[in-house]
Length: 61
Image (cartoon, rainbow, N blue to C red; front, top):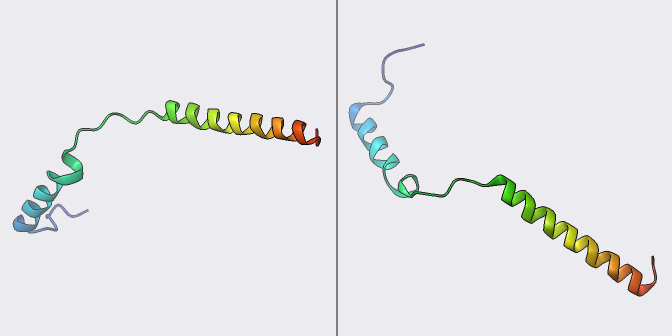
């Protein structure tokens, strides 16, 4: 593996400037995967209950 930097100092400065602006500087809340799971599961369960009730109402079940 080479130890020489592959970018010039000017390029490294431009990369550092890009990293420190825009998307990377905004403080964000941590990703809460379990909450996403619960919301998704709740929506699927609600749709299942609605489809069951429609099936009972129409006479398929």
